[in-house]
Structure formats: C-alpha cells, structure tokens
Length: 116
Image (cartoon, rainbow, N blue to C red):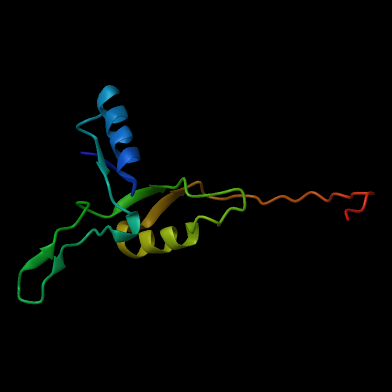
C-alpha cells in the first residue's frame, strides 16, 4: 500500500495539514508528522544495550521527495541540507526529487540619479 508522509516542524501547520487530509478523505493514505525532516529516520535507533531507544519515523525509504523549501534565491532556506539528509537517511537510491531543477535569472538595472 502506498503511503504519503508529510513532515512539518510547526505544530499549527501540521494540524492544518492533518485537517486538509481528513477533509479530503485521505486519512488512510497520508501521515502528517510534527517533526523537522532532518530529525526523521527510516531505521530504528538502538540504545546500545540490545534495545531500541527511538522508533523509525517511516516504514521504508521513500521513492520520492517533494520540497517546498526554496526561496527566491533558490537555496536560502537550507534546501541542500534537507536534500543531503534525505538521501542519507530517508530516500531510496533511485528516488525522484520534485522539483528536479531550477533556473536562477538576473536582470541588469541602471539608475541615473544619485542618492545622497
């Protein structure tokens, strides 16, 4: 069965996401976690004594990562850190990233007035 997992560190936004999931009938397919994705793991964390001190957040490594952490400068919200962590801990080797690319544009401007 396919499962979609969303993570959001803000409790208010997590609750809003959960409400949208319920209202649209996806409660059995979408799990919202109130957690920074850089604190998630796809493996149980052992306690060093043969037990487990923290359970994994997702059942298996994900096939797709959808990001919304891009700002107008493309990398200002730490997108590279999120992607690197996800590939290390959360994604399968052949996972798809969305968006898959971006373009940064520039415009030259001129001003004939001087500012004092």
